[in-house]
Image (cartoon, rainbow, N blue to C red; front, top):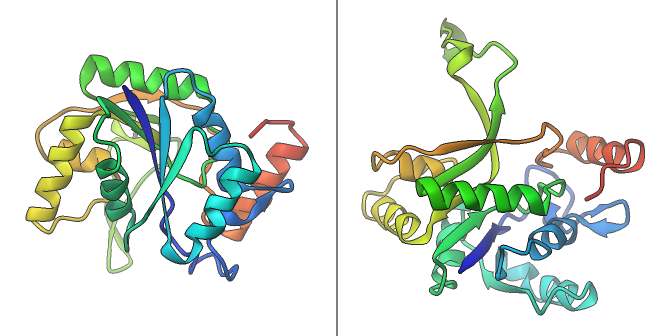
Length: 228
């Protein structure tokens, strides 16, 4: 069984909106609702588990009912950081054989890309959506660049990220035991010596982190008619 996990435990401090950014509206609909519609609409996903802040959980559960998502989506209380929220959502899906982890604020995902990523994970145990880096990347310390990795070896990684559920459980358990923090789940798997398959993804699969990102998302939705 495939389960989608959505870490949405942040309270939006960096965004400065006064409430979790995932509850802000994109073209009149909460960002997280647009994201969940695509995940819940994927025929290869049995259900979606969303980790949300305790202070926003009641509001979120009302959204699930209002937008007719409660039959496919359930909530759990998220953790202090993204990694904690994924672990808590994963614990609430003991029946999962494979999981797809997706950012709450990437509303331009498609059900087809979720399916493709899960398919890659079934073949290789772990897969992430990404695309080749187009900018030159510098390694910087104390404001000084001292190394330029070959661009041909660099990919910008997005979500969804899909994994064999047992593998991801082990990766998170090791991280807790060793007090290790990662910026994504693929990093937890990589440190176990497991290679991760790259699934080509679209540039429009943006993450809404800052106010400028929300303005760009509004443009993509309204002007280019990219559905979310």
